[in-house]
Length: 426
Image (cartoon, rainbow, N blue to C red; front, side, top):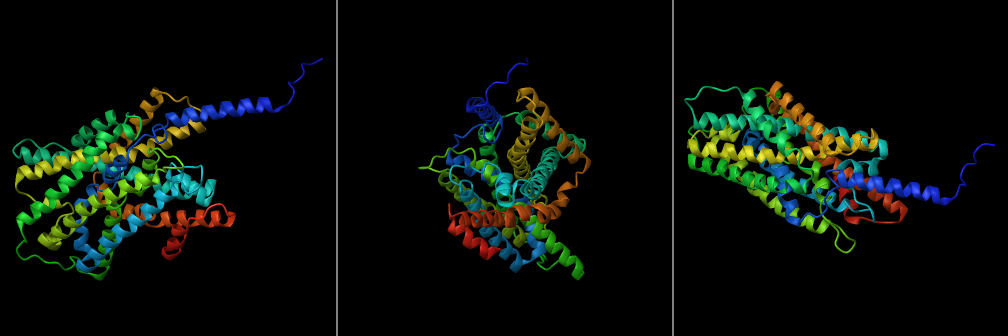
């Protein structure tokens, strides 16, 4: 006689479920996004400033030169209002389903569009934004280091940009091993302070330089097609400047939440502070820079400001510190995605060695692309239109409307404000 199988009762299944639940909990405590939930509201403030006020602010005067006064001011103001509104939607949607938190952008997409379709819609665009930003900042950090070197030591031997990108990358080979968002809060705070500092230097030095002789505010392009192309390229630059929504849910996931005190309270407080800082950075730089230089302004306002040398050198070093923090903010969700796939799908054991290899490979990849394509920043207009605009301006509205519609149909929860406003925008 063969050995009898154990009787089928609920105990075996219960133990199995408990083991699975304990394993998933252990994995969640190891993954970067969900490993620490003790952030304060001011963490969200400087994380959002660091994510949004990137080096893109320095290209806003150039975008203004391609848009013109009327359309340029309108686009800047509307972008500020619309992106603040969509960010508010995302903060509200983080816990719109009772008992559940959408800790990642793609989780909200999956709830809105379905498990597979949500991934197909959100993840490719999110990765384009986050990996694209990391590559752009790798190049920007290298260029700013080179500008600092050339300004401080104008008689020194010229050093290739490649080496400065490698120097910049060497910092990330160290910082990328900080485990989660809360562990990079100090780096993020320094980056937020630097963003306000170099933005102030940019418009302050422009005012000191004064309106240039023979300044012109018309479109530079000689043909209608060129003007239209530049106009849409400038819209992409503005979309890039306001691209911080891709990491909002991940930032909010680090804030503690209870039914009595949901995370949206401290998160929204931090967002308001962040957007005040955004306005203080963006509007003076864009308007003053364009006013002083007109359509002759460079695509980086600091290039148009040649003197005083010490101030321009300081501003470039501030940019370096800022993009170090921004790189980490945008890289953290990518680390989370890669580590989630390796641990949950491919069944790798969560370990320091796995994290060390994965993150070093990612930094090396972005460094290699940055070195190979140092003109990558010139593609900002394309990426702004292709991925930054959808994830910042559009997908948020769709994400808000569909879950609200489903929840209304189920008679379980009605998020009235998001539902009605989304209808207007859709």
